[in-house]
Image (cartoon, rainbow, N blue to C red; front, side):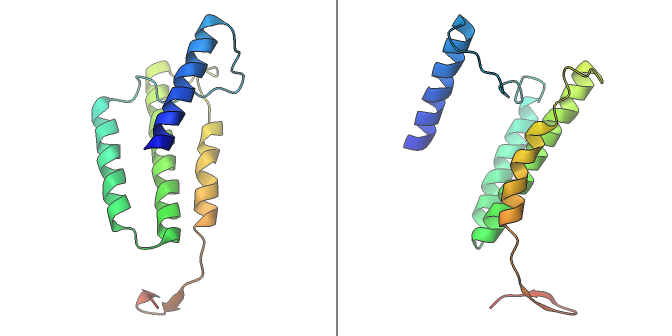
Length: 122
C-alpha cells in the first residue's frame, strides 16, 4: 500500500511539473489509459485481475497471469484508440505492448507432463 501511494505521489508530482513546463517527459506513456477505455471495461479488468490473483498457485503462474493481463489491457487500449482516432500514425503506439514480455518470459518453467493428462504437479 505504501509503495502504491508513493508511486501515485511521484506520478502526480511529475504530471504537475510537466504541465507547468518545468519537466519534459520525453518517453511518456501517460495517455495509454486515457478516457478511450470505457469504465465498464476497466471494472471488468479489475475484477479479472482480482480473480486471477486469487487462483494462482505459484510464482510462474502469477508472472504468466500478470503478462497476459498487461497484454490484454494494452491491447484493449490500442483497439479503443484506433476506434476513436482511426489509423492516424501519430496516435498508434505499440511500444507499450513490450512491457508484458518480461513477465511472459519469466513465467517459462519446465513441467512434468503426461502424454494424455497434461501438466502433472509434483
